Image: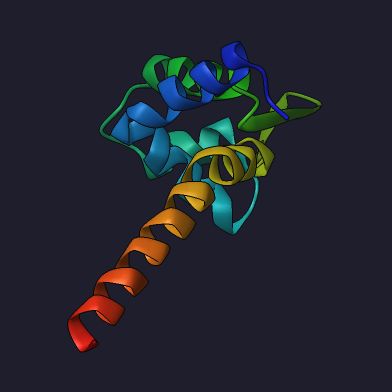
Length: 107
């Protein structure tokens, strides 16, 4: 279970479309910071690093250093916790309401 500060950090990190795009890129496989800079060539290295710093602070990215390279790995667990806490409960409730509506319309 995540505490409120950790949840806030995840929501803040996910609020920016570029950070979501970086996470999408890491879904496929871990990438070095250089690889991410090449994939997002419209951003300078400093901007990519700033976004990665926010993602790392939210525990969405785990960094592994190998020599001079910095490998960025997606950590999906904070997103899973957000899903369990917020999305799945509301989705279940919404499905119950839709089922009642459907039953009311058919009856």
